[in-house]
Image (cartoon, rainbow over all chains, first blue to last red; front, top):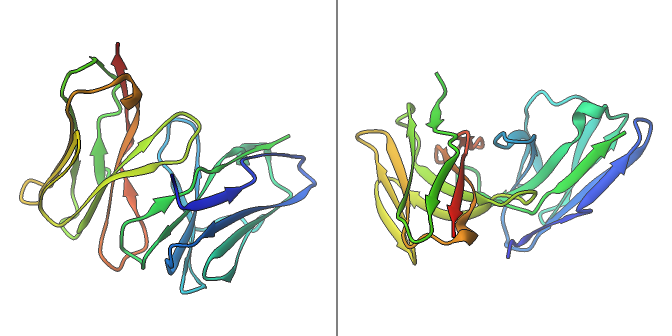
Length: 112
Length: 111
């Protein structure tokens, strides 16, 4: 079983809603990631947090806002999304950067 | 040209067969090599990882890295229908923060 836990597993939201995706890991990892995955494509990197500081933002639109409250938690705040943002959002962690990366089960997001 | 090339398949084999999945890459700086298994509508599960060159075996799975040829492989012995999934190769430079994926190979094991 994965040790990266994501909630909720499924989320349907309207284009004017504000919602959040949550991620938790208890492996003592110091790097955490958000990825987005569309059907039949590999995951695409969105954000990287290293030691609780944002270190990479892959030119993600501002309607996605990440937050790392502590070393075990990672949130992704969603606001004014578009239907094309519907996808599987994956949280991941690794001991440090440039190491093996472990993914959670993902949150399926549908924007209507 | 993509940094990591992986044949997307689909690949269909009978139960019990040996499956060989492969990726080639162009960046010689990659040091960690990973194979993920992804079932439909689930997150990728880390199956095997190798640091630098060599072989690694875990049960029915063997991962090989040939850095001189920039080629990695995953072998599945005695394949089972439960092995049916998409297999993603991925690699990263030590200290870097961006994992580079192949396109994924969709594998079906037929009973």
